[in-house]
Length: 257
Length: 215
Image (cartoon, rainbow over all chains, first blue to last red):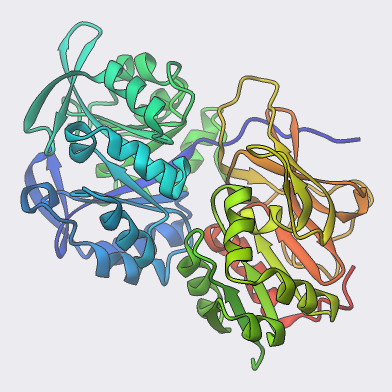
């Protein structure tokens, strides 16, 4: 007799924004504060039991290239959970380099907006599971969000929800959904945004931007995010991975033990 | 630890994470796509991410299918990971019908969760023990039942013989073979190189135990 297990636990992802060589944290993607060595933080979160890691080179789009290859190689040699890398990825070659260095997935924003076919080519070359669409969504009206690029600096004129739908059709295997309005504020996720996107697409949605407490994280997961990407909460040591999991469990949310 | 692990590099998926994991656990791990090296290897790992048809085509293009069959026939321990596990089976229904390596009789089929769960199956899910199946002597020996490991896939191996199922997991009520084993051939659908401590335990075990005596 085959016994089914309960629902799969949602994934807790530590997001590390990097302005090489430092881990930085901003507020609404601006006003950066240096937090230390990214690899050290990554190893600490891994040891604490994080489910995945996310590195974003936040100045890469400005320089037109991702500078994280060495850091990715160092991290992949000592951290054995999935690692996603984003920032400044423009071509199949860029993706190949990061995957060779030890990334498991890449996240793409600016280049996909400039040339949506990149998503299709990337998914065909590496598989959809490897391609994360990164969306910076800024609220423009009730129930409306616009997609931004370059860490919330550049407007695109695209309706964020429409863009996500199209990008998933093209081959994006996951959606990293960052609220520009909430990012770094510690005021909680943009719950409406999660609700508008998560049920709409057939691929996992990673909610990002805003949570300052375990309670906030729980709300994002209750809004049906498949995963949450957390930065301030961990970087400012408001929670460890373990203490967060304990609090989520106490609220009836299943986590990986 | 003197045993050498040969990770088969056939141009499909991220082989470096696998290499990293073995090296982290103290194994002497090398990459190779050389048929002679594979024939003579002490232990083989077949990684891989992507489509079944592409996987077999890339193996065939590099003339690695026969060397793999010879190695397995003479008892070389082989570990298939993710697509590498699926390739161990007889055939797949992914994008048409494709013949596999045939080490474990069975078919690779699409996952069909009943609760409207998202495909692919991505994330950490529990290792369950099929009824009557012991993990003693297998790669999972040190791994507690119900440990979560990392999956990312849309298809699943369905062995013909229930005894070849080493571990299961459940996704939306759908039974997925998390690991399979027949004699010296083991496969895991999840990524031990991405499954934290539990995954590394398996990696270490594959580098140390005598798998011919297992099962």
